[in-house]
Image 1 (cartoon, rainbow, N blue to C red):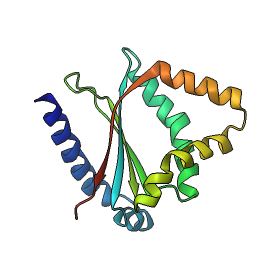
Image 2 (cartoon, helix red, strand yellow):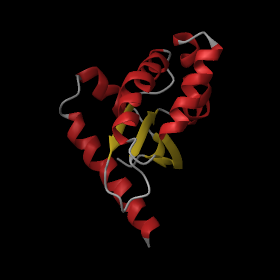
Image 3 (tube, rainbow, N blue to C red):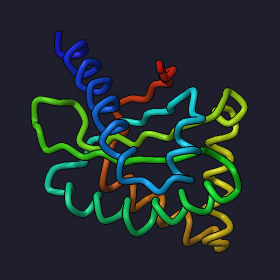
Image 4 (cartoon, rainbow, N blue to C red):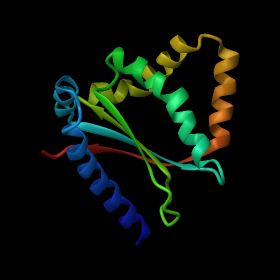
Length: 148
């Protein structure tokens, strides 16, 4: 049951990291994150020999887009987790904490709009998209309800 192992690890990781990061986060961030009712979880697998490069891409390209979308109210918080365990189907897990289904429905369009604001040149955005596709494959996504 590899799928059940992945789900169990995902849920355990979310619980541990939510508790661990809460003690280090500023009070405002903890307050926002504590308002979360849902999490949109994306699972990605870095292509062979692309783990470090994809991690750098997240830091240098995706995170600025995330911050821009967050400033616009797209989500409450985002966390990225990375593992190099080859028995798992994913290497990078991105977790967006959301207040409600309205934020969930608007997450994709809000991230796209933030990308346009940060890079208005559509040709450059297309090249960024092609570059990111050369680094990783999407292996899954799920929406979870946070139980408190």
